[in-house]
Length: 112
Length: 112
Image (cartoon, rainbow over all chains, first blue to last red; front, side, top):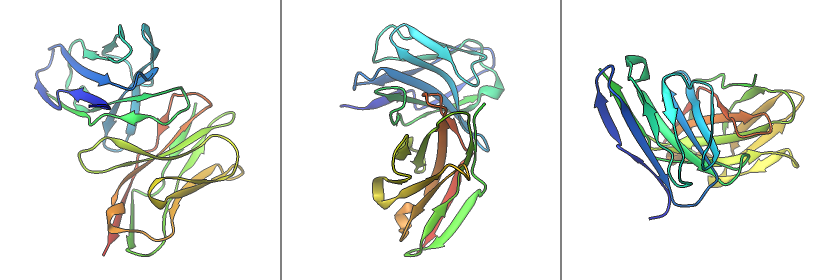
């Protein structure tokens, strides 16, 4: 099916563990983004990618790592999860920088 | 640095009445402005955007927004609200690139 998918949809982990959130899009969009959504903060950009092998930091990148070896995939890794990283994470993609972004369904991550 | 303010956490209207969701922004240069809507447990959906041109922008589901440069505002409007418009609405701004900054969101409740 065409679109943008995220996995897992729900994840519970413990402090200090490594966690990887997956994002896959079928449109061959150049740009991909990772956001976190927390009450009172709206969405905040973690990392973004303008093309395969090109990534850059957003507003809140500390504690996160991304890679983009293929255009369609943009995984987000929490190297050592902390409780402050408990959040809902959204992946998005767009054709070009100023175009509307298409969002995935989100991953609800709880760090105990 | 850019920022977005949505001064109202909640907006309540009766079905059939006009709906307005306010947004003001601060950004250098010519902004890209967006409105997104989020339904419960879903990702964000694009409503409309302003990049250049006519100050009145028409979008999905009967929504429109007016760009006001002197007041740095981009209020979302709908002439006649529906119960199905009840959702969380986000304004977002980017300074002529793709690094969106989102407002904290406004919860709209339309009562029958």
